[in-house]
Image (cartoon, rainbow, N blue to C red; front, top):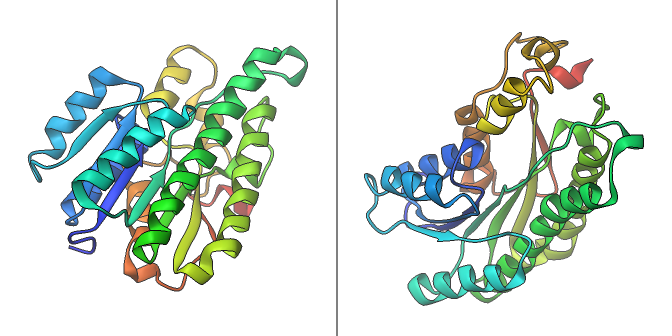
Length: 250
């Protein structure tokens, strides 16, 4: 029960890494509120979480909209009067050559991946400053550290998240707020499975150069997020924790 009575917000919690993390958080004793645009999957996830804690909440919402963030934080304030943990996880992807990317596609990836993270941090910090501290974990990617084929806009957004994480950690550490990011490698989430099914990428390409020889599991990423959210990581801030089966050692 490493998160007993902690109040946690998770974005992109309806599936994949977000869902696995929300589930792990509630199993470790946290009160979980999660946000996602995928409503059908969101309510299915809520049923899963409420097997452990009937007080879990799902708020349909878009991380790129400040009014949706305000609704989430108003709910947290009304229900619990504090926020201890934010897992800033929602994001999307695009496999395309740079010369083929349209302006609206660039804007969509940067808006969801980067602006969504910034808004989450902005509103979480406001609450954590009042309550005396907290932990924010941003979902970055190994694409912030190494180059992968045809992922220029995705890599740009994730590189910016890495820089933003470090800057915020520097600015807010004095207030007992720890801000870190995780850098997952290829993980078999529903989004990645969809890309495989559409023929955009193959499992062989994804595991090429991975010493462990397989894709990651969402539950394995969730375990890393749990560490950063918990007091076990009380002296960790500004870190980029790589969870990639060893891919970046090459």
